[in-house]
Image 1 (cartoon, helix red, strand yellow):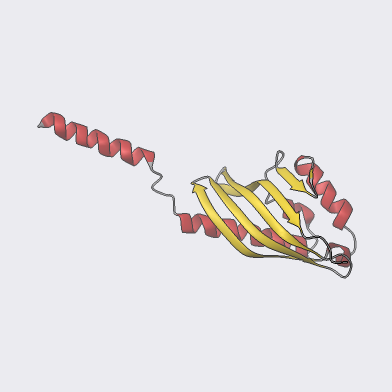
Image 2 (tube, helix red, strand yellow):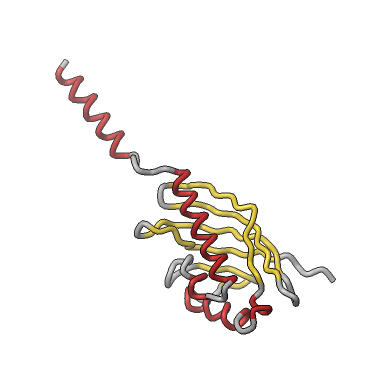
Length: 152
């Protein structure tokens, strides 16, 4: 009987160690949504470094226009080069239809629509993102942007 009790205690301890008691999927999703909202706000005020704070630094994988961007700094350089300067060039960014699937306590998949409103060449499309929790903070480890072709 004592052996069965010890086996039961061992089983409970093993099961408890395999779970993350502090993992709350809804709270994690809220944190991820906050990261995306902060990125949107940073872009809209012209703070490209603030926008890039949502990405893994230095080794984010960023795919856009059928090409890989070069790491975190290369992605920042791309944004400054292609969208910097006058506010109308940068436009106003908005993410919508955000869906998040928690893959594990430290990984999530995020898919959203985006719209970049600006007078010339507005953009819209879909982002697919692999979010990772690193040092207690959610960041984008992989970002894939699929833009709609402009209507002619």
